[in-house]
Structures are given as structure tokens and as C-alpha cells.
Figure 1: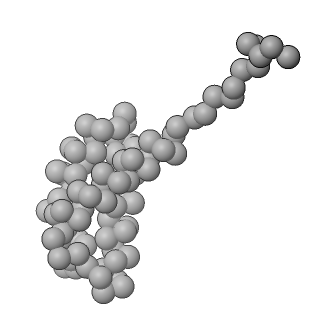
Figure 2: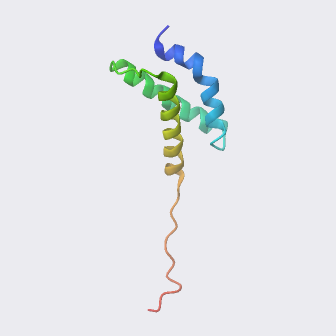
Figure 3: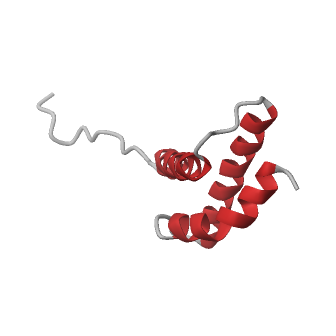
Length: 85
């Protein structure tokens, strides 16, 4: 079993619970976790596996949740109603 598989079995439920408490749907939480473990697989293949796996996973998960909300953020155009021109 690879380090990524071991991490998946050891941390998936905890990270899913953490992520689920921060986002609206289970599907979104699972998508975020998939991205987190894809990042772990990438750094592991590059030989840069984190020393403190748990801390790394939670930090990357938190950052992924922030990215999720940034991507969903909508901007409202400014209204010209109150302009004196």
C-alpha cells in the first residue's frame, strides 16, 4: 500500500467531517478531498512527501476550502442609479 493510500484510509473520514462542516454539500466536500489527495499524490511522486502528514493534510484542506469559496464568490456590478451625471 502506498503512502497516499494509507493516508486516505487513515484521514479520509476525519477530513471529510471537517470539510463537510465548512461547505454546503457532501458532493462539494468529497470534491475538495479528492483534490487534496491528488495534491498529496503529486508531491509524493515528486519525492516531496510532507514530514508531518496530518498537519499538511489539514492545511491543504483548509486552503482548498478557501479556494472553493473564492471560486464561488460572485461580484455585483456597481449601480449607476445614484450618480449625479
